[in-house]
Image 1 (cartoon, rainbow, N blue to C red):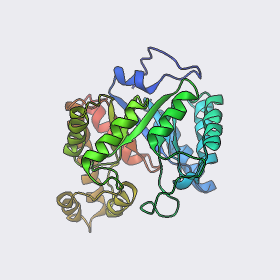
Image 2: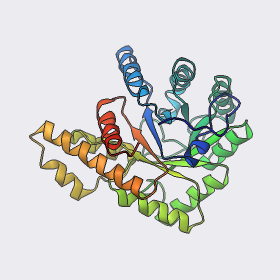
Image 3: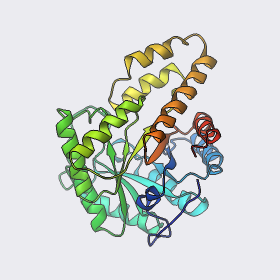
Length: 304
């Protein structure tokens, strides 16, 4: 998708919020590699997907800030060595305010002015007790404010179709989301989900509570049964049982299971586009093939 850009941030990149006004956007998410082989594979994937001209790409931030430097380094390289528009994830967990300001400054120096602000999971155990840094922040809304106060940044936040695992109920989760938006967030990206209705229910309840920021859909194609378990670990939400049973039909036929997963993701994205989703954010797991196939299926249907 070509970038129709009405304005440019000081670093030379368009704010994602502006791209969404002429959307829908299509974007990809990567995570920092831990090995040299992983780094080579990631850059092959980046070059492969770069040809699709995505609206932007994002780089995740390890639990507890464990990939802080590699996240910033990778984001800087994307900003200077590719044609891609990079967005960095930033989490508050295990960081003092001074450390967060340092990271924000490094990103700004590289011209990266789009940031996804997250509270983050505790290191080692994503479902463990969340303990604030003694000189840090408590909520994602606090991080949004800090980033916005630090310069001319476009800030996104997370949205949870099934509620955040630590929220006691849907109403509380929705209230926290609205607070993040009122703190200065310009858009949101959902945690991964696998049925369009889950996204639509989230969008409806946020609108009913007075929220009006664009919410992009986080999509990860299921290409093997292990992806289902992995998705539950990453999202903290159960995989839809009926859909899991559909995938289980192909347990002994990996090729058929993969084909079904690509078809399912394509149909879900197509329905979301019909329902007016402002953007689709593909969670690639540093692989390009499945994501590219879904994108190409949508392109064949003139959806991208």
